[in-house]
Amino acid sequence: MTNKVDRDALYADVWATPMYQLIEKYGLSAERLRKSCRDLHIPLPERAYWAKKRLGLAIEVPPLPNPDVLGNTEQSDPFTSAALRGRFSDQVKAMISRYEEAERKARQLKARFDWEQCHPGKRYPSAELLWGNWEQFSDEGMILCATHKKSAVRVSVSTWKRGISILQTLMDRLAAADYVVSLPQDEGRVVAERLSARVRIRVGEKIDQEVVTKRKSWDSKLREYRVRTPTGRLFIAVEGPGVGEARISDGLEQKVEDQWDLVMSAVARQHKQAVDANVEHERWRRDYDAQVQARADEERKRKEAEQKAAEEQRRRDDLLLEAEAWQSAALVRRYVAELDRRKEHGASPNVGYEDWRAWALKVADSLDVSEVRVPRRAESS
Image 1 (cartoon, rainbow, N blue to C red):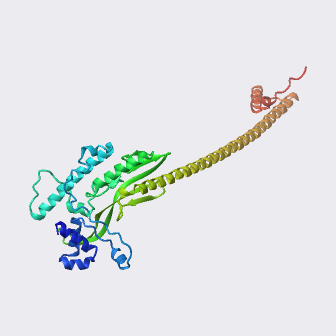
Image 2 (image 1 turned 60 degrees about the vertical axis):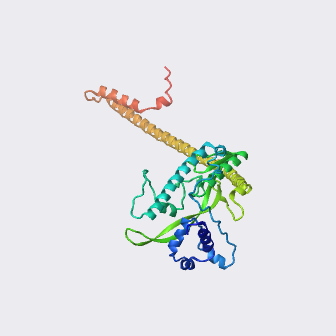
Image 3 (image 1 turned 45 degrees about the vertical axis):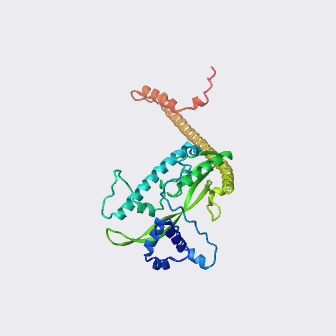
């Protein structure tokens, strides 16, 4: 099943006959038959396909991709034509270089895999050290420049040139529609900005997934693995902040490149929602700032009231202390006056009475602060 006729026949069979019937026709296990389809880049039906077909529902059957997934590039390819390649921006040209290098490594992995299948147990004759595994690369969907981060273009080895061409056309159309278009590294998306509102756009490929059972060579145990298969159907996803994502995909009759009106309409719709979201966010921010300011004013007034009450309490405490000190000063003066009266009536004071008397009156003067508040008037002579 390696020539074009066999590939076309197998493609027709897998979409017309359930897998459990095909394994008898081809004399292969279901896993081996699925692997053959993946190696030949034949899209496989999803699990719900047969149920929908029995119910007579409309089902989209993907077209058979170009069989030469890793074949030579034609001269009409815009990536090999210097005149056409000039239409790409510098950022996209840098992206093309990365994808060309990734495709070159994929070619080498495929060549090594094919050689090792024909020469089991022998080492592949290559002067270049090859990292990676073709089977793993194939099982993971053959995504070039795959990363866990966001990516402006996430497509397989058979569609990356078309995907980047779509990306460049998209950027050109956005610029013509008065958007400020950029491709920042930290965003992982094409960013289109206008009126301080942004939408983020990416080009992707629909990848089918299925769970297959494989026997590993090192322990001969069966394990289930999730295998991803590229479908060749591309889409453009337009995302606005907090407003979800809109997708325009390849259809049976129209490809994404034939649906630019829908794409730009989706961009305009998402951008309007982004503008509305910005207005709503600005309103919320003003309300939030007003609430924060109101709380700050309330807290300031509370602290001022606390400070005023504390100052009033301090003044009252000082007043009581002054009054108590004044009473103590008056008591000391009355005590000294009583001792002076006794002395005038003939009592003999102890030795050092006059020094003590002067000290006692001095203490009374230090306790009495009434002179500071209201000085006494000098007595008239």
